[in-house]
Image (cartoon, rainbow, N blue to C red):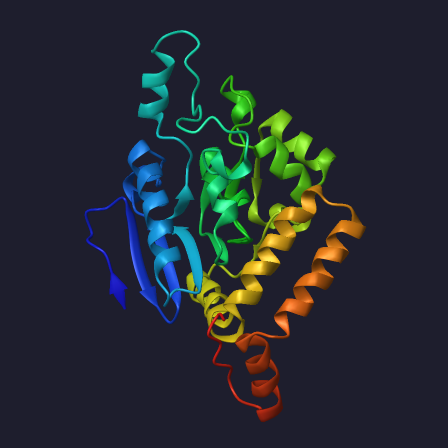
Length: 272
């Protein structure tokens, strides 16, 4: 297993084709900081560049996933100049989705899984909306508490959440700012519950299956299809799918996909 130094707030380890990124501030319920934000982007880029990594898991250390922005950071910002925006985007002012503060997570070419091992709130829960898959402990306490902090829904939450669970359910969670549990998250379709006992082991079983059994090229293009379908008609999506299916037939991964099925053995996909 490849691991990184323990001094980081976001720890990184790779095994069996899966990179696990662990928010490591358990004494602060993994509350979010500017340093964590920087390290997340760095670690995601590191995982994307590593040919051995075929799936990425984001989770938290201890009893929380991420309890939201560290209150020390919020207090410092609330004491700042009037009109300073909490969590305002920095850098590229482009309207492109990937240029937004956490929008790049939705453009990661490899499957990105949120393993919500405990409490998640505010920006901590927002991060998971940008992931492809969300697994959660049934009793985890979750919230979008913006209305209770005098804030609006940040980082695209008001755009993403209705598309995941429907407009009315999203409005109810955002307007009330109430706490809900992992069980309710599963009922709404926001996340899938896995048993609290051996939670991470169960998540890693699924992540390793993706890493071992799926074509990296196919998964990358399926992610692109899902992302672009948000803005397409059925006809547009179908025409693109037809074109890509034709392109798939000339790839090594398609040939291997057929061959391993016929030969009844584990696949050896190359991503080509």
